[in-house]
Each structure stands twice: as structure tokens, then as C-alpha cells.
Image (tube, rainbow, N blue to C red; front, side, top):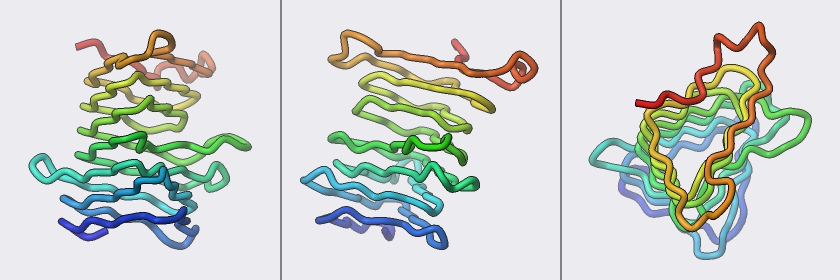
Length: 169
């Protein structure tokens, strides 16, 4: 999706293994019917401080079967149940990095990567089994009464030095 362009999704879509999804600064990806993009290829959503990307109602899911899949997000607002979902399967693979973004629905992170300088307005769940950096994020519970912040760690003792789940600053 090009800069300053609004793209309306009317049906579910896929990004194949040899392709990628790129959403550029100032773009809007919108649906009114909760549509989904299933990605087997890389996802790159790159807004800027004063030129954010808006994802409205679209769910982006990643394949658990692609080892080198990467999701990189910067300065993006996820509204109206829009989110990034990591499909379960034989173990989630790939890397997800999200910076300076806002999620207005519950966010579930279960890949390696970084979450920094984000705002989670309706809670978060993190499952880390390897390399994960979660720091300088704002977490709000919204209307959730339970499980606002859920952290699951499956790190073997020899790898614990690589795990930085929470930095309280």
C-alpha cells in the first residue's frame, strides 16, 4: 500500500512465500468486515512519527511453517480489532519487531523479536521461548478484568541471560 493511499479490503487475502507485504508511511488499510491477510512472506509496515500507518479492522496472521519470516512494524495504529496474529502449529518461527505503535485490541506475541515504545490499550500476552526484548511499553487494561498482562516463559536456564521480558523504567 503506497504512501497516503487508502486500501479497502473486501475479502481475505494471502501473501505468498516469495512475496512480501509492504505498507508505507501515511497509508491506511481498512475493512468493515474483519478481513484477514495470511502471510507466508515478510511483512513490512513503516510509518513515521508524524506520518503514521493506520490498520483498521484488518487482521494480519503469519504462517508458523516459514522459518525466516519477519514482521517489522513502526509507527502504526491498529484500530477496531486490527492486530498481528501468529498462527499456531508446529512452533511459531520467524521474528516480529514492533516499535512506536498502538494496539487497541488484546495483543498476543509468541515469536522472538522486540516490542519497544508501544502502547497496548487492551492488555498483552507474551510467550517467549528464546530471544525477546520487551521494554518501554505502556500497557492499559481497557475493559479487561482478567489476563491484562500475561507472560509465559519457556526458557531453559542456559538461555535466561538472553531474555529481557520487562524493563520497568
